[in-house]
Amino acid sequence: MKRIIASIFLFILLTKPVAVWAVNMYSEHYTIQWGNMNIGSGNLQGEDDPYGLGVTMGELTPGYFSKNGYVVRSGFQYIHSIIPFSFTITDLELELGNLYPETPSTAFTDLKVSAGGANGYQVLVYQDHDLRSFFYPSVEDIPKTVCDNSDCDKDTAGVWDQDTTHGFGINMSGDDVPVGFAGDTYYRALADKEEGEGPVELMSSENVTRLSEARATFKVNVSSLQAAGDYENSIMFIAIPGY
Amino acid sequence: MKKLIFLILLMTLFSRLFLTEAYAQQLSLEITPSLIEIIAKPGKSITQAFEISNKSDRDLYLTANIYPFSAQGNEGRVNLDLNSQECWQMPCGEVFSLENSGIELNETFLIKSGENQQLVLRVNMPEIIMDDGYFTFLVSQSSEGDFLNTSGIVGMGAIGTNILATISEDGVNRSKMRIDEFSTDKVVVDIFNQLLFKGVVSNQGSSFGKIDGEIHINNILSKNKVILYLRQDNVLTNGRKQIACRTDTEEIETKDCSFSSVLPGIFSAKLFLNGEEEESEMTRFVVFPVKIFIAFLVGGFFAYFLRKKRNLNKLVA
Image (cartoon, rainbow over all chains, first blue to last red; front, top):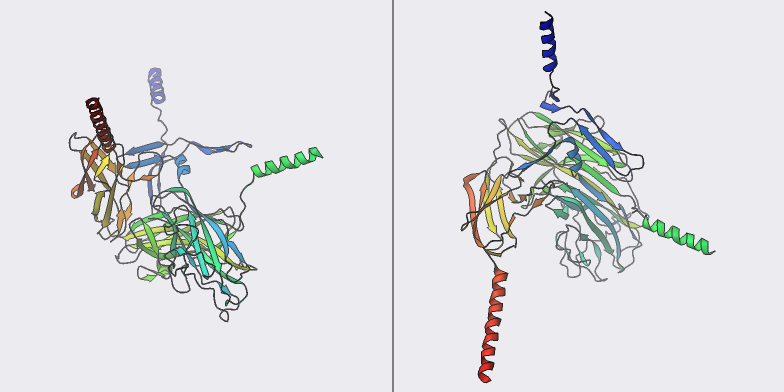
């Protein structure tokens, strides 16, 4: 009898189940099979350290796997390798100052994009209307530029260098800008929402980018016939990833 | 006095070393995920959570909205229709809504500086099977009535994420990829130089799908084979997409479909889609040591010329 009890006890000890860190979970819409329950995790950071340490313990199969064009980055810590889609406009209030006839005024803002998706991104732009006085419609808007040779519009850039050419336009320089902006004297008009025009591309790339930066420079030059006063409009910058 | 001047100079130097950029009224937004793909039965509802992060230096008033888009070009770009509020031939408000309490589509909500806001979008699939729907979920800064005291421009920003949706009873993908173009940028390429493969795939099916393909490169003389794997890009219904290839590194980067060889030879490159012989296109190119050949040619010419001149000199002598 004692031997039988001892054998049973020994058997139980030797065949103790190994912990399985997998859980099946259900909801109305999803079933998760072999979900991973961690035995420990957290972010560790010293008081004075600029760096932190992310820890996840007990994962089933962490690691990087690839074969035949497929890549799997398995593991919770890989979440830090994801490049989110982000968009920054450095200045939202762009002062053009007092406007004097045939004395161009400029203002600029910088655009920054990070895009981790495989198909890159676009930045589109439009204006709500032309630069407008508080006394509109009694006072005419400052029109869009057509550039020095009347060869630019919202889609095509042209040279705008002469002080006798009037209007309002945009120049782009930096990463991923259209090739039409061949230099800092090349300007385009802006797509106009009030006229029913759709937004037009300012920056684009078909590749992943950790940081693409470009500068948008706005220029206005009024004629001597333009009524005195303050003129204002809104410019909307839209950042969209590729599909 | 000397000590004071020295101290001022030192403080100026240190402050310049540790200067940080300062911007007037900036906007900085982040959104995840940047693309969602839906295949759902007619009449079913799907919910998807988006995380919006306000990384600006100020609180932002934002508005979320849905707009349809169409493909633009062959590079995955979007042609956004901001004038349309129609989704699947009905008002977008009947298809899309937000599950958040207190936040509706087309209504302003606040995200404080440094904070995140999760927006849960519900998609009500139409009751009948229709063509694919392609939409952009756009979160825009609302006009805050910033008035400048002089002439100026009020800048505003928006960030979006794309939604590709197929209505399907059985979940079967009905895309049909075809190779429209496949070629190389050169017919003769020097050894060690890169040769680029260019191709365009079109989708002639009734739902969006992913490119699944490989380029098999064979050296006719040596029977060596190299395989390039295409990046699995989405192609919309009746759309076209340029091919790109994947890397095998940990970085999520794409690369041109390129090839180089240290050995000369006559090569054939065949693009296969879905592993099928029926959907394939072939092109040929030659790898030749052009620079080395030219160097030998020029060297040989000079050697011949010098020898001839030496012989002439001997004769004269």
